Image (tube, rainbow, N blue to C red; front, side, top):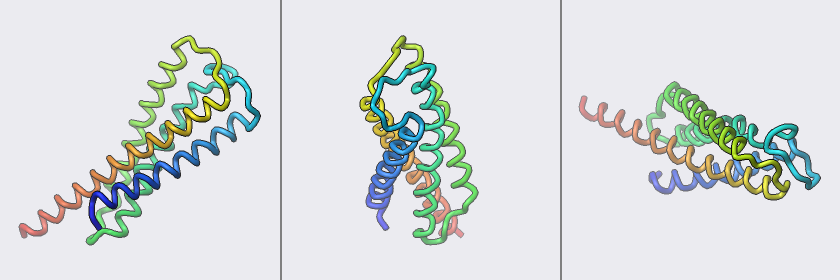
Length: 153
């Protein structure tokens, strides 16, 4: 399995999965009826960046790494994958908090349902691509370091 092909394929899958999940959660939270949504109360669209970012970052770091782990020779240890996923989730939470603060503080009041949906799906897919790519690169790099240590023995 080549690095570029594996990372590209898993990243593309992450974009699709996180885009679809973002769509489903958006519909679950804000309904299917097009309307104006408030960035702040009562809809809390800005605040929704926080849980979305945590969930997308966690799943984008964890799932592709676990899939890649099964395909790799000498299966990398599970603990570093779980630790990395937790760290990505924390970083995602920080990013989501910053976005919520910035968007909520811009003074924007309302946004159209369709445009909000497009923003949330695009954001979920883009964050999923970034995190999956970084997590897989880290996994492959740690696997190479481990193989070098074994070769030295």
